[in-house]
Image (tube, rainbow, N blue to C red; front, side, top):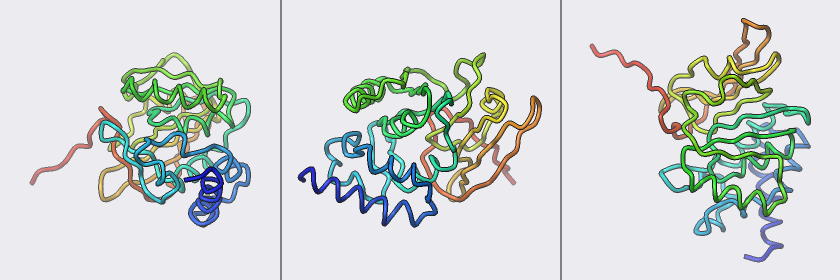
Length: 220
């Protein structure tokens, strides 16, 4: 596929998938067109980089669909002064989107090969304000540090409170919570030292983060 075709495919992705899914923030739409998504997908799926699907990654993980990435990015309303914590680096594409909007992104993934691949992709796009680490962050990461934005790029059956406690005042936590067939995107905003506002946004579906806490099931 020629480079010109990639540009057309990105345009169609934005106009036919992302914008119709209530993503109207022009900065977000421009960014989705600017960052070459095809440079972050596994080579075997390069021609499907702009399809309305979750692209398979190694370790039974996936890239989010383009419209979900756009919707989450719009919801977070990232400012140039924001410090962001991303749990689940994956391909590094969403990391790139975050880094283009924020002051700094700290991204953590349990799989070291994801980190190495994402670092190469980010470097190729001249993105230098993203710091990537390999580790198990689902139970907490640098818990003494507070962030303006925390985003989980996989689902969690149960959302534990430790991440919301790491938000600065006015900080936002975005997570997809639940189990199949019912999951919802939630935005949690810290409104005071001891208060948080939770907004249920929309229903969606994503594989669970590795090690995510499971919900209790009742047996009758």
